[in-house]
Image 1 (cartoon, rainbow, N blue to C red):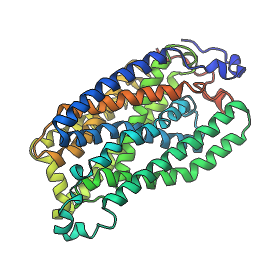
Image 2 (tube, rainbow, N blue to C red; image 1 turned 60 degrees about the vertical axis):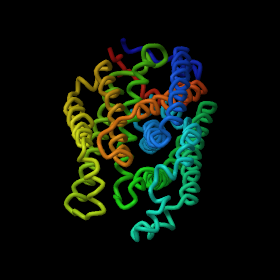
Image 3 (cartoon, rainbow, N blue to C red; image 1 turned 30 degrees about the horizontal axis):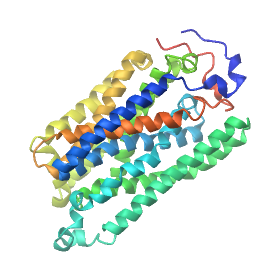
Length: 404
């Protein structure tokens, strides 16, 4: 693919119409979601306890994509980097799935007593947990659940609205407005998302705590989002408009960001482990003992190797980051490892020994199918690139020499 002249890029939104190929993806997503949902419904009646744990994993894999997109979208608005413009509509579409995720997470509220030991007699028996009762109770948990989603959806909706207004009117004021939302939005996002992961994951074992647990999930969500971005844009780049826009430079930029997130994830994971392990306090160390013994250690080792060491080593290569075919494989594998990571976090709460239930696979597949269908639905509502953004020509400029 050679560099094309970009004179036609001033022609407005029509030039960036989403290709019709995405309709097929939407249909596949919907089909997979329905089949997965039927399987999960069967699982709910045959193994109700397992269903809730698997559903929590399944929803969180895909929520990470929406939340990671929201964070990266705000970072893009704050930095105005050329890396973000070809990705902006993909990020916006991913954040547009948040209302669906709010609905899909509802079974977690129904399964509070199954998932969380603090809902039972443990609250009265253990003085440390009793001390947390003002925060850890079903009513507060439910209220916070709705607050989290309202704030996430509000931020996503606000940024999307400003972005679409820019499509109708070429004016630098829209960039300024988006930056003004993104700056405080990113701080709010950090707090809200941290507490959400404290509630949904950390309180699965209410004696244990880690102040950087939220950061660990941020890094994971950012990594999943960049991996998904690479996969979907490489697929979209087979046809116009992305064909003449996406170049090796963009893949290289996203590959570098993915590389950075791998290091950040590993840093938080290792820091948390090191501080807890060296502190050696009984109520804290137990969380890791559950996840290192009885076979779960194999997953821990897999995370060290395949979520960090091997992708880290491969992404050191500049050529690989520019090679669409190869980087897509790494991106896909990293999304799979996010699932393994969440399984390692949640599984030991329900099973002492390493155990993967078929619902652990069915739930992410079901949620993923619906997520993809909703993502495409939102993606089709706007041009694939913001035609009136003042940085557009610079971002898709003459350097874009294909990615074959």
